[in-house]
Length: 309
Image (cartoon, rainbow, N blue to C red; front, top):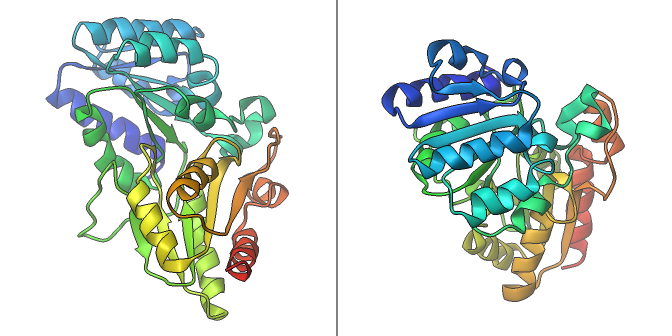
């Protein structure tokens, strides 16, 4: 199942149970998968047209009357285009608005550089009173959405639109919005990954095991508030750290982890991600190679970090 299909399915289920949940789109309900909700809930699913700032303000107003709005658009339109509205009308005002930005970073593919939001986490992380969450697969997204609805405040969901490989398929998997997931215990290096880079980290792990390097792998699905205790605990155990993210290396996971380590546990560190560049048109495999975001790049970064211990 595609991520956008799971999004629509879970929103449908939650809207049937909670009449306060509303969905607002800005002319992208079909590509984002929420179009069916407008037919089923015509009084609670809206399209404001190509007017993203208005979408954010409508949501803030509805929140002030007790509704729980989900606003959806492509990542650049759901973050940098409405940054002031998120900061003032939503976060500063303490409104309970959930913001969904789809196809972040290189996952924008053929929409090209203008649509590749490499800065969204850095921008929003600097705004007080907002939670930043990036799902890894459809199973996790389905478990996260009810917790996001229950959280009394703004939440940003940074979401790949299409199908992704399954990671969290174990029957006993329990999701916690505010705690990182430990994918593997290891003692040689801490590998902190997020979003589509979790799968690359798991591929890298297969290569590392062949060379006798055992990684402590943590999926960091929530960047803010960061699970600092999990980061510190892992770094203290391994003595070397690598981050892997689909975002500018400035302002995202690398920055959050580095800030934590600098204050609590200085540790040799390397990072894999977008090295302060804009995006471009291309398929995901090409873009991963172009921006050095493949499993092989993670392996190289791990070897560098371990050599600094």
